[in-house]
Image (cartoon, rainbow, N blue to C red):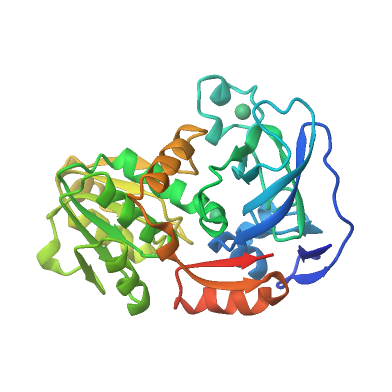
Length: 333
Ligand SMILES: [Zn+2]
Ligand SMILES: [Zn+2]
């Protein structure tokens, strides 16, 4: 089968033929229909220090997929052959302290799909039964493949508590764009998106932003009830702290590439800011919320999907990802 493989601990990937996998005990085998590209996949391609610390090549890349179940090796639960399923990226062990208290998404012994084990940029993939999500068949397969970032956005916005509030979204990558749509759907009074690139500012308007800006002006300082920091840009940390209203709330999602220092007295103590942070999606609460938003039409994820490529065109798809002139980029099979 054709697959995108990280073959060695150096930049780049190979698109090549490899043997088709079979479902090990506790896994389903799927025929992949679509797989969307994540910023994480760009890091894996580039072999950043983060990738070097998480990945042992050779490995099939990709973690946002939809596929049809061909085979179930183990107790199927509600799953059946023919179901269109996606994978939760955070493969939890189900036994550690966090799993026992309902925090499977931050399992202490977590394995990551398409990062710590073979993933979904391939014609066939295997997924643990316990992290397999059965999609509503009425959804578009491209939308099914892009639910993972929407899930991140739902988790962020849920923690932010947005009804009736002015929400500032810093960074309009795919998750930031999805957060704009979710904040709107969950009853924010006003949603303001900030992004340097114009393409994604325009897309944010389509996703429901009331206002889009290239940077945070000083006139906005102290005005946002809620700030969603989605960029991971070190400079945006200061913007987030300055823009938050006194006793406002910041949800941190973007991972800064370097440590940052902040003025704790000025921003945190004097302003009595509340902080939340999000890693992944709650399993399966967030996925149900995502489903509700998509099936009710309150979030239109299809608008976010701007480019489609064949699996063999992976390099070209990655070039579009890097350009920033895109929303979600999907590989179709
Ligand atoms: Zn992802
Ligand atoms: Zn666990």
